[in-house]
Amino acid sequence: MTPLVTIAHKEDAAACRFSVVWEASGAAVTRADMELIAIKEPWAKGLIYCDMEGFAIEEDGTLLLLDECGTYREVPAGLFRVVMLGAGE
View 1: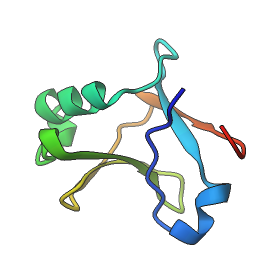
View 2: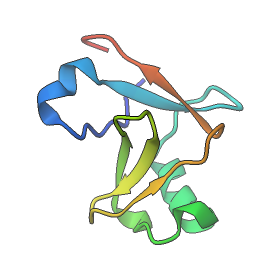
View 3: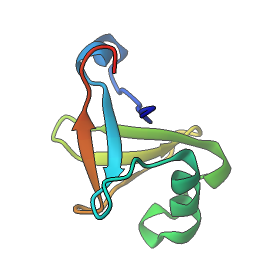
């Protein structure tokens, strides 16, 4: 599984690798999924669908969806699950 990962603090990248999966199915979230979310989901309004960056986790554990223009939206609880990855995954 290729993780869609954005790390807020690059120096912590080795300790903070993760993948995001759909809570309902357990399937990994793809770039195409992120584009559709940006287009269709009211909570993602304002994200640039054709320029999606990935996900980030805030210090308090809040999951964010980001575009490459610096816009981000908080992901509603229960929609996705974060899977922490070890070194080399």
